[in-house]
Image (cartoon, rainbow, N blue to C red; front, side, top):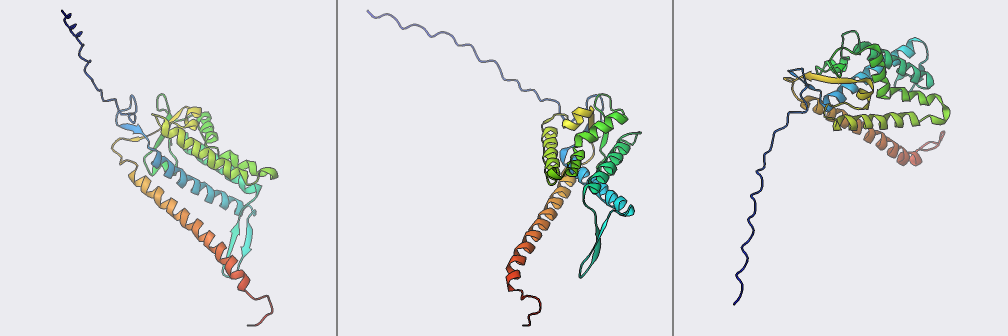
Length: 240
């Protein structure tokens, strides 16, 4: 006579899955109505500020007589370059950013266009002079001074570009949108919650990128056409 089959052991019901909706990481703790500024708005604001600093630095150099006048067949303009230009742009940038981040101003001209405010990360107070200086150093703009050393000329622009990409990556990965420069300065950027999201900023950024690509494509086309037309150009003094 065969033995009866053993009864299966009771299986406990799995615990119920209970999802909890986390609080938005964009909300600023202790500051209702404010959210951490989005990356696209910050990037477009930085481009605006960099353009202002570039124009102001060039104007300063030309006023001091450091500009080089270049005359062409169709136009005439002043070109600023060299180690004096790098020093001027660094000084103007330092004064510009530190001035607008301190004294209760809280934002540069570019940041004001998107209602962005810069403040202390803990309590939102205006940045001190030391914090503002550290945040500017964290931008990496001083890397342009590498061009003063002849062996490092050309490396300065690449170093600045790589560092900006690092700041963007670290700010994007941070729940509070704090890049390495913000952590170094203990700063944070916020904007009103009812302000439109980064859509307008992203649109501006796309336009800037497209214009930059058009410039690059135009330069490449001119170089290519120049190489093609060059052999067809008769030497001086030759009649056709």
